[in-house]
Length: 349
Ligand SMILES: Cc1cc2nc3c(=O)[nH]c(=O)nc-3n(C[C@H](O)[C@H](O)[C@H](O)COP(=O)(O)OP(=O)(O)OC[C@H]3O[C@@H](n4cnc5c(N)ncnc54)[C@H](O)[C@@H]3O)c2cc1C
Image (cartoon, rainbow, N blue to C red; front, side, top):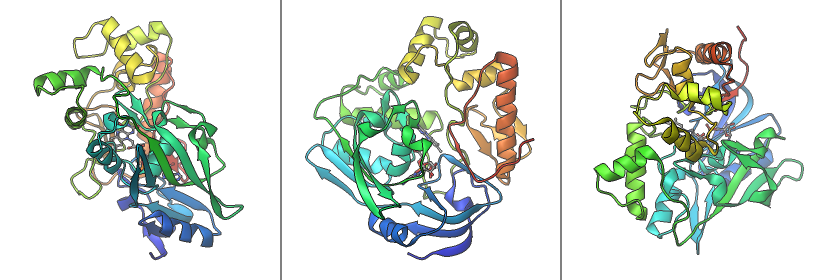
């Protein structure tokens, strides 16, 4: 473990853009992370696998700590993991031990720290459902403290830890169940189950269904591979809108489902039938799949994924995001909120 200076952060972000870290250290487990934290006296930015961040082209001041790797342990029905552990390794361990509660979040590209901070979710499950406790590093006492999950508030892609003060998550525990905790009700997943003759009530089948669904949605990411599309997944959160606006937006669905089916799907996915797909909002605002601005494009199949096609700067990606936000506001009165975290400074156009 070595602190390096002036290191490009491109390889630490799935957008493959951004400037340099003034100082950078990569921690392979929580012991290494704690050793760095107790010595650090500068500004700290913590990263996991960089799959949900847009890093400024001016880079990041102070020390950037990248947490990648760590221990995952099973204690009866609880999984305890280091912040840098790869989320999907927890899912696999749960499956191997016939434990339910996180299987629908198979294949989300995340560290455990990023998963807790962002309350990740997919196909009707969210991290909050099983999160038991979080261990945090406290700069004032230079020690870790363990807090129960209910110390914080959670909602769609939100954990009140995001509101600061800045903390570093060092470990977390998830309480799983010997029985199914959720029904799989998500339309695209049910269709795949039927096509592949898989049983949605079997744990291992559920994983196969979800991985296939994620593959079709372009939502798989391998941090070891050079073949990923440079995106951060869905760029915007699905917004909650008045019912009349929801109906206007879901008219842009192309799956042939009825309005009632779509409202129900929104309910399952976002906790409210007024929460519409941000992808439909972009279509309703007049944008098209594959639309391009220099090196930035809306993914040719999955419009909600803003993509760096090679050499785009973070500022260029940021500017496209602002164009989309402005159009949704002006044409539909809908405020799109980025799911992606902007790190460092960006110019307002
Ligand atoms: C192809 C693709 C598909 C995706 N699909 C989904 C999906 O289905 N559901 C979903 O919810 N998300 C999805 N995402 C978004 C992403 O996977 C999640 O947001 C993930 O939790 C980010 O984890 P990370 O380790 O990469 O965090 P990073 O991107 O490195 O960081 C994200 C934020 O968390 C903070 N952070 C990270 N680690 C720590 C820590 N230890 N302590 C304190 N703060 C920390 C960072 O400072 C930053 O603000 C997808 C992304 C991609 C690229």
